Image (cartoon, rainbow, N blue to C red; front, side, top):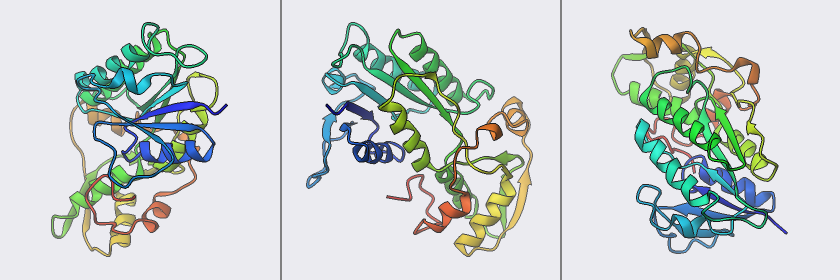
Length: 272
């Protein structure tokens, strides 16, 4: 019998790709979103309208599922932790249960959350710890920054005529679709706890990635690497956000740019 899998944030950049891959794998998928199902959406998945911020509808959304892939997120340390606490409470021993007991909870995190003192990263790390201490069967997957984020940053920086200021450190971006594929395969398997990190195929200086963006977008700018003070940027310069020994991704930044219709789009969700 196919597994019943809930994807929180199932309409977001990562979540919708996880949904596609789970459907391809034969799973029965339930998409959770704060919004009602769009009119005319006849995709082969169920829909649950629920809000992890308020808790409204969450218990109903998780009822009877075998696994939950948590792709929803909220910026800010307490905001991210609040979402996960709401979810854990709903799927915990006193909450919903699948056919074989408490659902397998998969939490999507970021490489470097334990080494980079950004407030958002601190929230992700605290959420990881909450999942680990929940008593639920769980898997945590950390990934490097998505190609989409890097492109959006460069698109915003390129709005200044003549000069494009970029961070003075390296990146190892990864394709969101490949991360979605790994999450889908983990969701239909047994919980593994902390899964191996998933990183992009190449580590390059931000200036090199910026040059690729400019070429793909047909813009001419002088690239100016900037060096910012503080512990956060010091951690980035030290490579705390990189995982060169876990370069499982195959899609390069150049490959990604070649598949984007509007490279200059400054939104994070430029692709469908």
